[in-house]
Length: 131
Image (cartoon, rainbow, N blue to C red; front, side, top):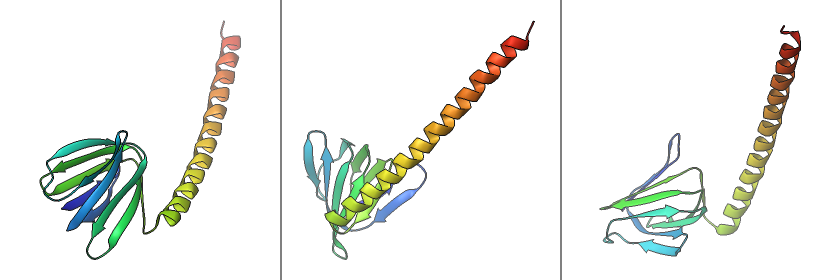
């Protein structure tokens, strides 16, 4: 099978000769083998596992998205993805990424609050000045 993982702004991963894929859905995990029927699945945040002869088993943390299998092509489109050879290392990487995203979101909220406060203050001042 051919595996392609797409992020909003770029292609994250392209792998040829994938032997098997295991994905998680809200209903549970399911496996994809080369001759499986075509399918579509909604993916919640979780772990997607794939195996190649060259690399063996590889784990990928994915944010929510969708998986589409047509013929030998499997396309996964998600918001974010991270690769890891072992689950413990992948967990640490995901935790660090989420902490960084939390800090970024917090600073964006602070900037938005300042912008809103400035707008309200300017609008109140404009209302006082207007006849």
